Amino acid sequence: MGIRLVKPDPANWVDTHGDVLFRYAVVRVKDSAAAEDLVQETLLAGIGSVQAFEQTSSERTWLLGILRHKIMDHFRTVTRDRRLWVDRSVFEEETAAEFDSQGHWSATIGSWQSPERSFEDGEFWDIFADCVGQLPEALRAPFALRELDGVDTEELAVAFGTTRNNIWVMLSRARQRLRHCLQARWFGEE
Amino acid sequence: MLSCKQTAELLSESCDRRLSARERMRLRMHLFACRRCSRYAAQLRFIQLACSKVEKQSAVAAIKLTETARERLRRALEGL
Image (cartoon, each protein chain N blue to C red):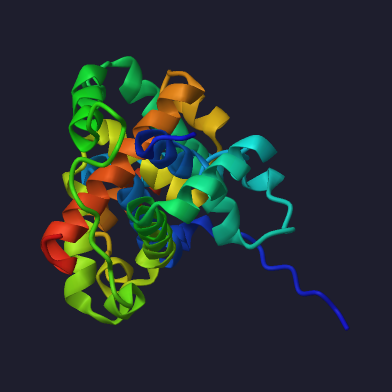
């Protein structure tokens, strides 16, 4: 039994991997122009280091690994710009509204009956995408990386230039907002 | 005793870090007695599950580069 090593073929990378890389990037960074730039950087970086490509993983897995790093760098840069961040006190007010002075829920929590059946409905997914899309970037970005890629708190804190505690708060806020959005737009008012 | 507010925060954090044995026990005790927080916990799990499936959805799976973007990329890679 022999192993046929396939030589990397950068000339075909746009056609072979372009869509997959773009999709991966745009789901995480949201902006398509930024996603295209990241794909370009990834392919260029891949060409630059194709000699070092060790064939232990597929070409696509290897390129996705490069893209993943580029995406983390992207968030590090954007965050430094400070445009990504919203005043934290906004989120604190939000939490305050959810609970009364004793720390009890101020509103009732609905019961979602057989929620997994929603997965079969295209309309659910449209609403879900909408709800995630509506999150401010400061919440959406770490949430996307956490849920899609399992990026840990430490790495997120570095990528977003903040503390682990703030990351936990941001993720909690993202989930709270999503829950509200899904309740209001899909599961029906509680 | 945990409040619902503390419970909600801890439930979310349990998705992102390991809770201590003490935290887990306090959480369990509160959830046992609190229907709202139990529902909230289930809803968080649902959201997590949905996120794990989102990239396989047809709308997402259909995302492609525009022909313009493809061309641009090809040109950027040419002559290297």
